Picture: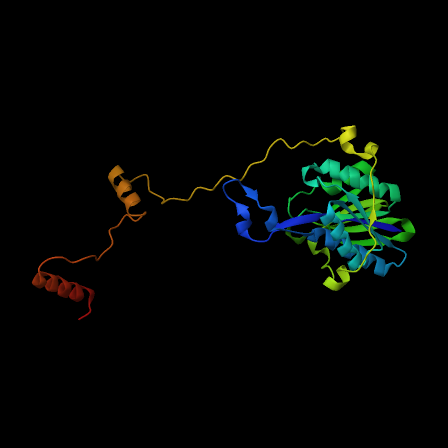
Amino acid sequence: MKISVILDEIAVMADSSGFDPISNVVKQEWLIHGPNPYSTAALEEAIRLREKYPDIQVSAYSLGGADAARVLTYAMAMGADDAFWIPAENIKFMDLWDRAFRLANAIQSRGNDLILCGRLSADENTEELGPFIADIIGVPFISDATKIDMVFAEQKGLVWRRLERGDRDVYEAKLPLLITVERGIRSPRYVSVRKQSLPWRITKIEESSSNKSSDLNVSPVTLIGSALPRPKPKKGAQIATALSAQDRLMMLMSGGSSQKKEGGLVEGKPGEVARRISEFFEEKGFY
């Protein structure tokens, strides 16, 4: 049985100073590239299934530039059996359908029984990659998995799916099958830097021009624009409509307080000031 795991590389800003508020652009030198935590959780689940059922073979796939190849090195260090890299230097300018099409071609050409990928891309906050790949290959699709098990005698997969308020649904589906997993399905095992630096074998997949979705013009999705969220207005003082215009104006000037606060600066001749302070102490019961 073959399990294919899709690993995507994400970029995380190392420090808030890497964002230019004038141009709304993140400085590339402040970005740290690494594996998507949702994808590493999917890989950990695949490795755990292999430990439970030894006949399973785990393959990792990644699309992108040199950073994507380094993500596959991390996958091999975690315990994947083999890794396949689909080069794409301009991946940030591809739409998700194009990415899904290239990954689907690479996976489908090598055969698979189960495809796992992360539910979410942690940097772009997108969830469409898994469903797109399932649609292109033509296999059933289950999202938001929190637990996975196999029934080999019947060639079926059992999937526990997250619902609201902690509820769970249990689904049964025939293989081949694609599942997107939650980040909390598994905690990825620790991989040392020394193990990552070993000379792991990464297979490079070169695509022919006929396998590119841009040539076939099949993308059903087009990004027509993007915008920053609108700033939330600050809440002002709540003023009763029954008050007169003068009272409402006084409340605005005093910050929302309709009553004049007691106390303040005492001015006058020394004797007058002493008398007023003495009266104040007597009124408040100090003596």
